[in-house]
Length: 457
Image 1: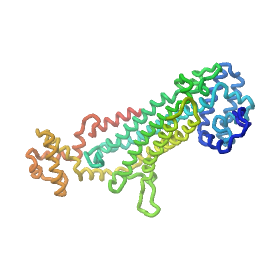
Image 2: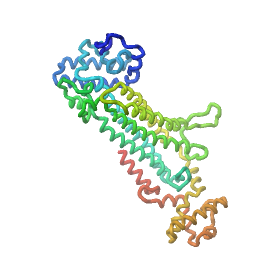
Image 3: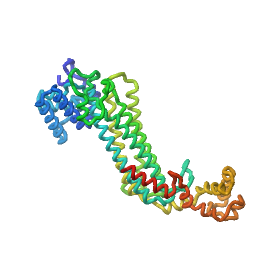
Image 4: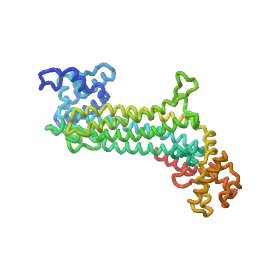
């Protein structure tokens, strides 16, 4: 039998079964982690006199040559060898002879694959955190230039109150900050070592799991060998964190799509992040944010796919768990790709300040400030609210905005109105007086940006 596990079997594996059960088509992404874990494992074996130093050195040298040959495209992965672990072991035996078979002493593919994924996910979680930093930096850079740029703020997608454009952008900074903190916290659980747990019950060899964990940079080892080989919570947590992250990316992308439309015309995306139409030459389509918005679905799908795989599994390892990898790989590629595009797209977008300024002058988003104005004159807020509602209705019928009405027209609704109402209604004033902590005033937005810079540093 050519299989490394073939001693028990009298027939060759059905070709269709081989294709179904093989994972090498996708788990070859784990090649570096698999070799890294194997080197740490044999070093630990030698330190505990399970292998000799000469055997350990020969195996490590062989693994490094295998890695080099894979990187140079000199080796071809085989479906017959099923997965990355058995392919590398097979390559190693070809490289150094039967001694390569000692690589698997004191471990199982079950703890080996779990170790590989812990290592892989740790590396890419750190990469994603760095990419989030880049997007946050782009947001801060744009925000610094637009503290005094006024834009309509919306609720229910209806104009609500004028705000600083920087204030609007910075909301996404803090969303991304929470995403980064969630991912950072997840590293506590990703950074556990299952190596040495064996198939499910540990091993008879006198291994030192703490040493192999130390060699691989893990902070903790699983106390229970069955949990070690069957746990995929760390992947679920990562997929969950990424689902929230891509939801935030999708919300920002939606705003970029809306703002870049002719109806809004608040921003213009750089040509390098847009495409044209095959039939309508005037079109400039915001394809990048549209696709980033759409990618949310596949990340959600990867999370729910793995939740479904795991929900009915008994302990310990089951072949079902082979389905844990493709969704994880896909999510990493999707999220990293999205973040790599988002940062430069934000940095290069043009802000149409005049259009934004015109928008806040031609709406009723300053109405709340008239109510507050009457309250400062001694009128109960509920009465003031009713009066302003009538004034807005009157202005709509007159085809005017609040700043267009004369003092005499205001005084038809309340004798409390005076000439200072026009200063109160200016968009700049409306923004500047919202000076409570976290508010949209230039002072508060400047403080917020400084806090963001400190957070990034």
